[in-house]
Image (cartoon, rainbow, N blue to C red):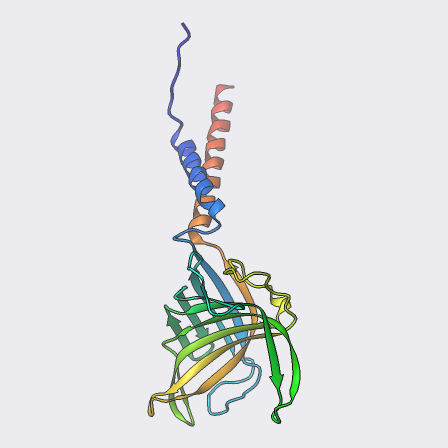
Length: 245
């Protein structure tokens, strides 16, 4: 009777197969770590619109936000769907000034919303249908000294506006960064309050220059582990074959 030889794979091969099996479970899901998705962004101050702040045109702002892709939709109207409490983490760095963070906020997906714009005399100047992408939340940690005293950031708002109604076809939460080329308005506003009076004093608008996806580190690690283990296994098999010869 022929003998059935059951042998465990070598450790490197076992690591490779284990890594690939885990990747096979995670990758079809698109995201990992509890379905978290991270977008990074960059922006700059186009003009010194508020001279009492110590900022200059071209000043850079960089950051990222992480949201829960499984957040339940909360329709606000026929055109607007809000994803409440979807922001798990938010951080930004204002060049030369400091870093701010937040851990709450919401995302609005606006699709095919009618709009009308009036001038100062109440006359209609334009109308149409628009799409928009809004990220809004609280922010802590950035303080400015200016002619109005000490001011501290208390909020942020990312606004992407498309008056051609070409950006979205549904109000589903976008799991990939919105196509920048379809939006005519691309901004992030930092909201400020005066620490002396406690009152809100306005906002500083920055022009967004990019929004990109940030790969999940766990997926990258598993992929790298699987590749390294397979290469190690192949090298050992090649060395073993040379020794037999």
